[in-house]
Image 1 (cartoon, one colour):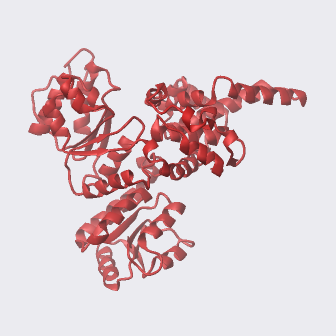
Image 2 (tube, helix red, strand yellow; image 1 turned 60 degrees about the vertical axis):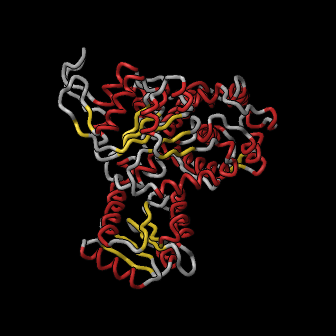
Image 3 (cartoon, one colour; image 1 turned 90 degrees about the vertical axis):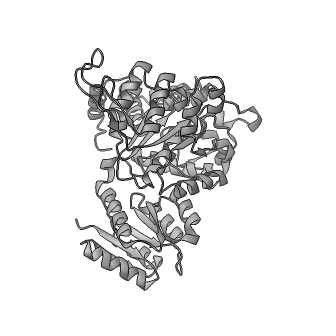
Length: 488
């Protein structure tokens, strides 16, 4: 199918320049003098990429972006903006802009950006980066607007960035956004949680190894630095990195090359490093647990992500997004929270931050009755008065950082007996109605719910979902077939 680029600008000269440039590159296009004309045309056809100005008569570019993303979240939209509009355009990243193009722009740069957007449009779900597959980076709170502006200002730089914030605030999402909106976007984004890798394997994970470097090294292996060549390496929980590896990482950042484990040939590293931590690195430096020189190497630009309790005004926006995405993953209609239910959710402290809110929305999608969710339908902990809700970092925060966070949250949210009481009520009602085969039916529904929730939590990754659910991959595959879930 032919890919088409829509050009939207009230300036005829800008449209003409882009039309000629796209024609020379054999890229099909259609032009519009206003966003309203383009919105009308969207009822009949959907382009592959849209490039739109911000300031236009009628619907402006940012409102147009919001309307497009509401109906077609995977459609790449490039925003053109004069330098005076840069802050507002960068803030629009939270609305899903693929990239912004400052005016006056270089024509070749514009065509290259459009071609990159076309490539993403072609690959679609294959690259696993559609908005539905990626956790949300949304927010109107001032602290989040500062983060969005920083992402824009850093878009033309490969400077090292240190992201700080509590567990569950979305540090990896920010790292992904920094990569996607950078000159390295066409190259790999490789993420590594340094706290999740055993100490004796972490060096090999980072730098690779040569055959025979240690017992079990039956062949050579590339490390994450080589996999990220030309792109971005995200090192999460950098504060937990062992001291000896801190030294090796410092050497790479200082010298620009490294050696594989057991290797003698230097390998050049053209990689942008983004690090993240929930810890106070200055304190770890004082305690001798983190190298001061490495801290200064990483701390070139620091972005602090606020905990969710500091931006409760963003909760309704995030709830709508997560409920919509959970519903899409499970193939059901999205649910909505009543005003009273939303009020209860907004007053909750969310020690697990955005990740915990996402887990709540998954629970609501699966467990809450009816399309409109009332406060009585919420898990018990969300119905407590504000002064009885824990505001510190309880065990729930730690649980949300583990792979089984969704399960841990659901168990805590439901309480020990609530879901069993619901189950007992249904069994009693069906027995009273004279039904048979109740266990088989309920078991199938239970397993279906677990599978759908597991796959939703892992973004469709079956191996990871099977591990979290306590099954082998073959068992999960068999269950999906038995339950008829292949096409859901």
